[in-house]
Image (cartoon, rainbow, N blue to C red; front, side, top):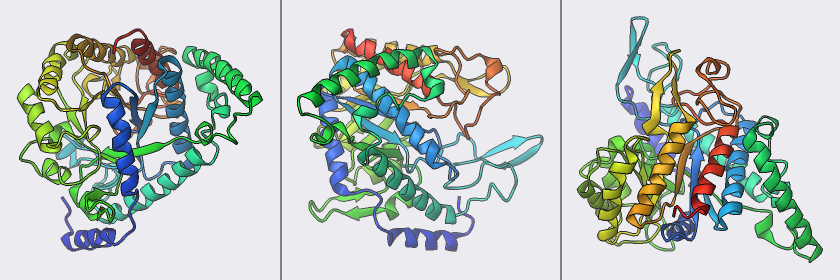
Length: 430
């Protein structure tokens, strides 16, 4: 993939000398949190951009975090269980593609593989795989992590700011109005606690949140160069993110991605599509978590709204029968993508919701725990997915269709989905 092998080797060598982006202790802490998710004591919200851009602004990062915090508030308020917050952020720069090339107006060029490899612009120079981008990805991830730590620990995440998280375009939507009701009740509870001497100044948990990062471990040269030895445990840890996942295209048992990730101590995810068999999934569990460590492995199902009810229960039963303590998470985005009449890739909110509902129904049937959701979203007011509370239609897609790759839920649709998921949880779907 890299035409200049010497430049690639130099970039990888330089990466291997740079400080870790995250710390081994944080990855261990996330594994412990996910162990609670596996037993139904917590819920996982994993969300963020489909493909991060090197040009993402600080405001956009803040607004993405804001939407995730809003969703977590809704889920926690309705269910009464902690929400483990993991972003698809600070490293989600690479994208798998089904074809090595793409053709526009008769011109065939290499496919766009994410900003860590090449550029989205459609010229020969922009589509060259440039290993210097590996170093740019590291620097962008470091800057994003620094900003996230400032927001989550510096007061932005203070529960007393719950009203201020509702941006105007979200607040004016039906979901935003429902959120305002919750915010009023939380604010009333905060005032009561303050009157009793309990506030964000005396209780750190009210003004800070724990937020973890994750991305698909697609480029193994990048991942390996950021793997470090944990001096406390002697384990190898991939310090590019707290959690890494293996994609549906790269989950082969004898493949390089499974071989590499089974050797690091991070919590791992693995995408599971509708073609996976019970034997496939139990073999992956044994390969990636042979010691049956709770919280070590998250299986992220991406079946499609029409297939989840039939395809998922046999997998749930097989894994349960094999005694693997996995976290089951629903990715309702990737199995429900289609091309609209205007030629743009999109997803319909009702299809996304249908797959989530089917996911919960399958767990209810199998007697297992629906552990969380995995979403592609943004805090920006984009028009990329149809439906939702504001009922976007095909004619709206061209207004603010900004994604570099796959369509994302906007802030209003994301909060709306959080309410729907919370209702499923509260109504005993788990």
